[in-house]
Length: 318
Image (cartoon, rainbow, N blue to C red):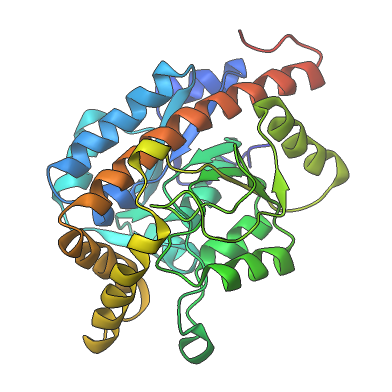
């Protein structure tokens, strides 16, 4: 359920507000891929293309960002243009409230987008890959807020696993400790972002969107806090095999450490280095999985909305 309050700095685009009022399916989309994840002008082009992918698959897209001290849920062309061109903050759970209080602007990470989606009453969020436990976290204690937000907030997140530059076994372990369901979609293994397989088994597998939706609703009925992670592997024709990726990741991670890069700057720096090392192959794979997740998110959102209608005693949307 949305958090209803007139005091919230929350603005829903008319299309999103109408869909929510009708019980129609909505898919949240993050904005850090626009502000920090993709080069210009590809960032703006991709933002529009992902919204189109959600619409084509039968749901309403809601790209989320913070602009001038307001959480914007659903962005018009002018807002997307601004995010694609202006330098803004990268916002997670720790700095979302402070930025809003100061009237600032920023792209929302997975964690911040989960928070905003829940505030807006949106149950499904599609992204590229979640953050997790960074390599060397035993010394740096660098663990993404995404994991804890998944454990706190009841949103179903569709992603191609965790970003493969992370410590994937440790990330899975933390997700299990936090009680987050990790659901493989279409295969048994835990997806590894650019690669379909990580070599790790996923705890659960669900191929039917209706079953994923039913699990989402059952958690609410049981009063279990937190969301669920649906691991949707990159399409086979677009993947870069794990054996090919791993040496490139090791080189990029080592370069980031040598440069003294820490905190929120680590992931963008490594992704940029990987684009260079792979001669653009990682970027192409990233775009393919983003589109695939947007489409899959729309299908799952339709199932969640249909079952919400039945629970409320009304027919679900066609």
